[in-house]
Structures are given as C-alpha cells and as structure tokens.
Length: 376
Image 1 (cartoon, rainbow, N blue to C red):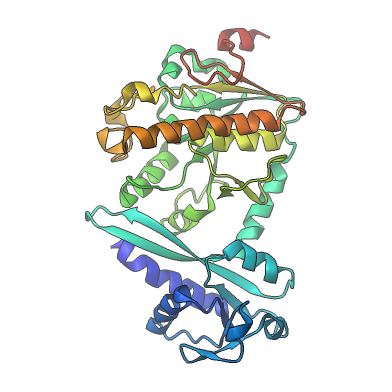
Image 2 (cartoon, rainbow, N blue to C red):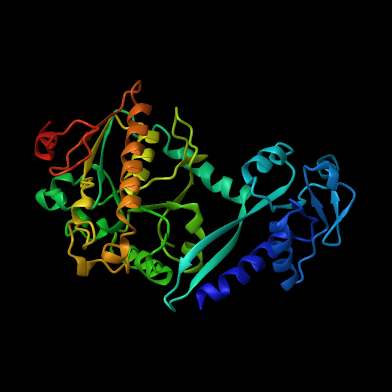
C-alpha cells in the first residue's frame, strides 16, 4: 500500500541527498528522539544535535553530543541539517543566513486511506530544493498588466452562462472545472488544485488528479501546493505539463503577493487563483462560479454546476463532507475574510475585481454580467 511505503521512501529520498556529508539534528527535543528512531530503522547516522539552549551544549542527548550554534556555523559546507523543533521558521531563518547548509524540516500530513485506516505521512521538506521551484514563479510577476482575466470556479451559477464566449480570453480554472462541457474551447491557461485534506481518501484524490490530466486541454498548465509535490512525482501525474508550485502560510505578507515565498493558505481554491492573478498584475479580474452559497445545502449534497455522480471524489460534497454547523460557519467566515484580505491589498493598485456570478453571496466586490463584459 502506498501509505505504508510512503515514510520509508521519504527516508530513502533523504538518504540519497545526504551524499556522505555530516548530519545534524537542530532541536534536542522529543521530536528529535522520534526522528532519530526513524533514522535508525534505515541505518542513517546522525553526527550531532544542535540546540539554542546553552545548558545542553557539550552534553549528550540520546548518546549524541549537543553542539552550539557557533560550532554549527564552523561545520563544512553542505552539512545536512534536519530541523527537529516546533520552531521551524525561526530556526530556518537563523541558519539559512549562513548560505552553506542543506536544510530540511519534518512535514506531516494526516490522511485517510482506502483501506479505512488513518495514516500520518512524514516527509522531509528540502528548503533549498523547494525554494528553487518557488523561484520559478517569478516568471508570472506582472505578466498580466493591462489585460483581463477570468477566474472560473464550480458554483451552480456556471450553468447560467455560455462559456464558449470566453474562447481566446485569459482563463484560470479550479478543482472540478475540467468537467465542464466547453473546457476545450475555454482552454484555461492554468488549472489549480487545492492540496489533499481530510475527509478525502488519499488514493481516490490521486486518481482524481490523474483523471483531470486526461480531460484538461493539452496546453493547460497546473498549479498545486508544494506539500502535494510527492504525489505528483510518485505517480508521474502531469508529466507532459508545466507544474508550478506555491507554498501556503497562515501569516502572509499583507502588502504584496509573492509567489516565490509564502502565500495565504486559502480556505477555498478560488482564493488561491485570486492571489496568483493579483501577482500577475491583471487590470481586471472577473469571477465566475464563485457563488459560495454552500450553506444552503448544509447537511446535504453540495451543489455545483455538475451533477453529484460526475464528482469521483469520495467524501467531497456528500453529507460526509460536513463537520458541524459551528465549525462550518467559522470556516465560511474565514473564507470571506480572506477575500477581504485581497480586496484591501489591491486598494491602491491598478487592479479591480468584479463578480460575474449571477447567484453569489460574495458581495465584497461589485457585480456585473458576463454578456456585458464580453461586449466591451
């Protein structure tokens, strides 16, 4: 089973990156102990622990000497540092300034498997390697200046529109929009996927990505969060497409979108697209299918422009997708506040956002009609 093998393969991938260079765990803590146990399973040697607590320097932790940050800074170039502390960002910022180490951190993902079990997948996030991938997003910066874009979501109001009229326009789509009957004519420039999350079934989610690859126009590129990179690469999905990765955070820059760094972790996938379109500098951003009226369906099947039997994802839009009215109200509020976050960000920029969704609760932006916009 994929989930059973995932963590072992993570260690093998990491082992191949070490290239016989020294290995240091930064964080003499419980996380360091559990990570050391995993390393011992595949005979990966740890040379030192490092810690910011001076009381631990010179002592042994799990039979391994603890060194100071000063000692760490004198270690050879390409020393491999695994951050085994909950203060990941702070430690990364502390040691990355030395510009000489390979830095990794532990990332865990809770998943549901098709065998009915829950798993904790462990991956070793390679800061240096992934930053190179994020830096590739610089090509998108200001690429949409003096142009307009259409953000296509999956709300039921999509059924009210003749989207063949968007042929030749700069379109960007999300999630199950690849099911639309006119997807070839619309031909999105980039299609976006939210990362895996419970209660979705992991193997089913991966199969869904594969199906989308077979249905999207050949020229459509992909954007997905970097935590799902392993799934894309392990299963060779989108191998004939350009795949761009973004990285989510709960503490984004409030003044600018920077896709070479962290971006706001979206509550819903259209917000992920909106951030990129702002980064690209489009003068006009038109929203379609951003209805956000799912509370009408609370406890039942969530309505979209497509029929329920067309959505192959298990636990996505049926009654298993709901997790309590209070929690869902809070999630909905968070979503609208994220739209407000971007509305405030563009107030002094030459960018405007217009909602073309005919039945939408998203009233933070002015409304208009697609037919009128196309004629302009």
